[in-house]
Length: 94
Image (cartoon, rainbow, N blue to C red; front, side, top):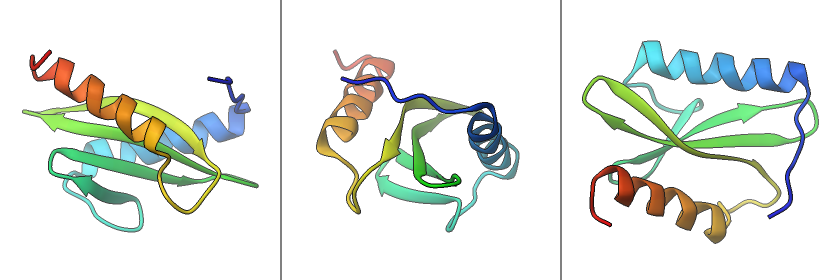
């Protein structure tokens, strides 16, 4: 998997969006979209692209599972699969 670099401004935007979700939970669109039961995405609009951070909530904790830069309308299956695997490990299912 190729590493995609984000600059300091992009990191700040993504971090602020994550913080908005962390301290405002539960929160909905346009910042958060539910993917499936127990899995949501933080939606960050950057200068020329879109970033997503897939997460779950366990108790009082927001657990970040995977982040990526979106290149198409649909969430790439590879990224979704990785988040699901990490969620399963977190839940002790593997």
